[in-house]
Image (cartoon, rainbow over all chains, first blue to last red; front, side):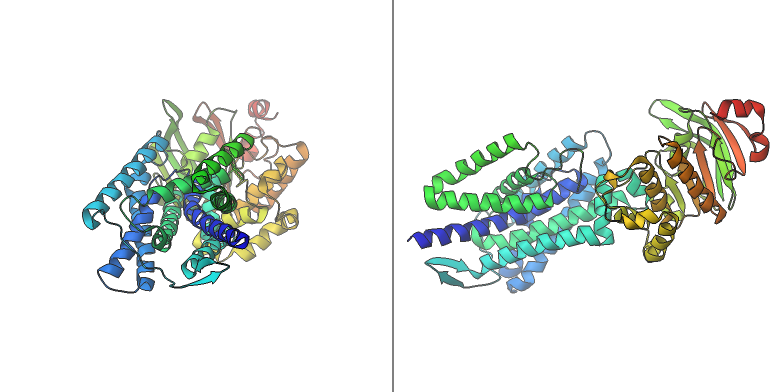
Length: 294
Length: 233
């Protein structure tokens, strides 16, 4: 019995942590590079998930085909958002307010569009990996293992990309000193577009991989979005390491509270932890604050 | 190779440059001398697209680049070492240098270019892994210069090379610029005083209140007692 509880808490925690991290990664990347709080991140998440659902349900193709379609659709959608709503206000006064309103508006539009196109019923997106294994009375699903592995792999990939590639270094350069970046012939606005597209792809991937756990309806983007925001603030806005660590800290904490104190305590417990942490470190665990960047 | 015609530029509400005519030839060293706040920085920023040009023209190798974006002007070969260095603070010395070679054709040449910059500033190689924000003022200036040389520069625009530097670092910086000039690079240098420009300058412009008031060969203008009094600190 004791063993089961412990395994349940650890498994749930690592899984939640990976899910949180996966959602937070794209959000923190865009904040770090573009200083854009993308409140449409949850909308991009369901765009990816619905695209994958459509490929499976209407085209009767396997989920392994639907997965890349979902990712690419989400990236394309994010790029469209950049071109229509972000790019026109870059460098203008009121960038923060304009983009906040635009991204919230876009979220509402996406939910409404999903409602019109797909109706409000819960949709089932099939898992990429089926089956599970019983460990000490706890169901360890293969899809869950895939989510954990994917999340860790993506953090590593994004880190390597930003550290060692020409394009990744240019993203950091633009985020740290925009004027110098343009003097190095780096196209600043196009680089923002690249970051937003990558972030969109990450949200879309999260949407396709997580929907088998949560099901999919027009408002399913909201919770992951809020979780990503919480994780990002806890870890420090703009910090990739912060998103990784905060995802697991919050995921494991929540899971342990849930298993040992009951589900009702999970959310209050998480918020208490966040409040305490923000009193000690107002910029989050690895917050880069206003001055330092990506 | 670089020609500026009747250039007007400034900031919201106030014009700083009132019709500048200037040119820099192939391999030529041109110094714009002028007191602080008279428009030297504005001039360089308007040429490299960091500041919009209100009227007038900037021509480079016969091409009109007046309203080009800064990154495209840089890609054309005009490399601007800006005031305040504007390094990438959270990147290492080596990463800063590599970003200088961002432009496609330069990127494939980044290894040999790094070698050349390390020849000029050997310490950059030893401390390649250090974050740029931890460098001293003189080191920053040298890194900014080295980063500029990583690009395929046809002309180098340098904004007050000695600003804020100690005398020793100032000497080092000017010695490096001399070396770059001897290798055949065209230079447009904005400076507050004429103390260090001997050997660098082929021609001198005097800039006052946003206008070029005099122009002439360096050996002649820098002998002029009136000029000497104003510009030798």
